[in-house]
Length: 289
Image (cartoon, rainbow, N blue to C red):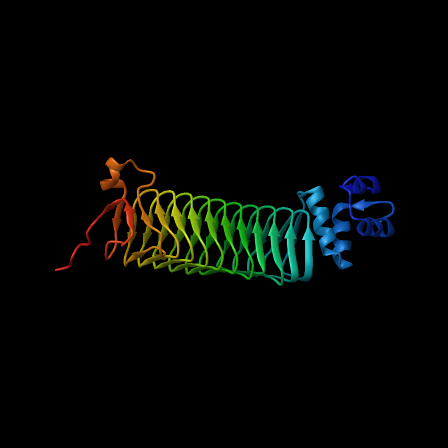
């Protein structure tokens, strides 16, 4: 794609950025060389702005390894080994690494982000799926498609997933968790704010929720379920320990089930009857002989 003076000006760039373009590319230039020149000159935000204006390409950057201060590539980035960036890794399409992806600031892709190792960054934004062995983010994580994390995921702000989310270890999120389909955690789920899954929530360990816990289908945990707000399940609710809502809040099951079907589809089971159970069919725990 050829970027001419008129083509760039039509996007209403900032005055300083447009002067840079006229000074360095008075006759225009191809899209990616302009992005590379902006990054090399320390104008990473201008490169990101340009990518947002003109969109992705079908180009593919293939490397054995990638170590840089920052990269803004309009197509897909495919690296056999690790990706290490001092600040930013951004691609108009997907980012794929056979090893780890580490960035001092953000990792952003218009499509999927796939790592054979860990992903570590301040914030992570994948337009498609996100897949890694583990994920650590000092900021937010946004996933447009499915999330598949083989081990732990630690996120210091909000976690947003457009489809299903599966975490093979602990899931620790200081902010809110919003999942467009089901949430599956094979260890502990701990959040500083609300959890909302459009479908179900299945956790092998305990659930410790900083605000409301909501699922359109059922909620099941292998250990206790504790929330600082309400606990609301569209169908059944089950815990291997106690179920405890926040002070002044209730525990609700069967919110999407007719009352005549509560006995089969809105069952509530735990080590003891929740003190604030307001809907659903309580099932007494089975006493071992």
